[in-house]
Image (cartoon, rainbow, N blue to C red; front, side, top):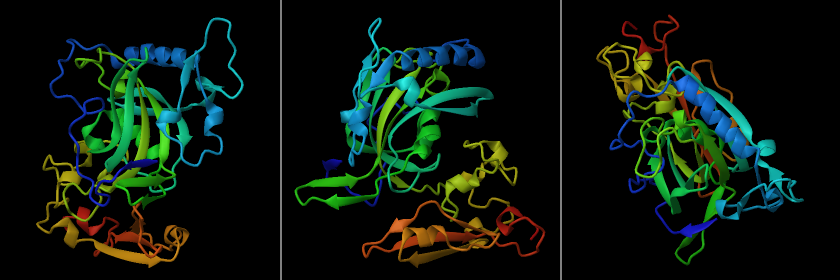
Length: 332
């Protein structure tokens, strides 16, 4: 995938698009519908779309560099069968389930290319191309030049889907003002309204609209929102992919991902952990390093210019041996 040359190592937030950002200017419908009941309606709508549309699947077989521009989705005519070289969407998507806002949600992913790089977490920054559509095929927004944004700032479906893809395996400076991204993630997400805008319409998107986004995932940047040395995704204590007061160790009403002293003991979190980097000849050697029970290898592994790979390991020390790491233990 060739794009206009941009800064590759620092992902700045781009705020000039609306389709997937949480819209603070939208007007919420009052009272909102029951989320569980609306999910049933939305799922029926999405399944109806998937069962009546097909895509050009053969164009993605042995395609080393697919893009969302290659994707053609076509509605089945009455009595028509799916043509050779195409696949019914319902037969190609992967169904996923999550709990969000105390509601069971189903959503669907069409994976056109996995990608060969890192997989972002729900709390990272990413750089993508994308196109957003309603189920009636209305295009409400798109970005054909890569944009970068924080997944925490978007409608919740994005943070549920993007971790299922990988970034580009590598990139090449073509020398003409463009960059070639190689083997990046490409796919489509089909989201119920409860994982999108739900009861808060925008000027283009009606309330309670299921949405679909075509995406190309190029790069990721690992967030550490409070600068405490622990990436934000590791401060989701209950592992639900959301930051709430359930993730607040010291009861100061600040979730740990935004709190640089997680246990309130007066010692900064960064001073109660040990961060070590390891450089290995291959990616596999980094991923298979032997770790102690109190260590974790971060999901972001850096490919160096000499072709080697650098991984980062955090050691969560437990000075008093009580089973609680120092950074979460006010009495260690």
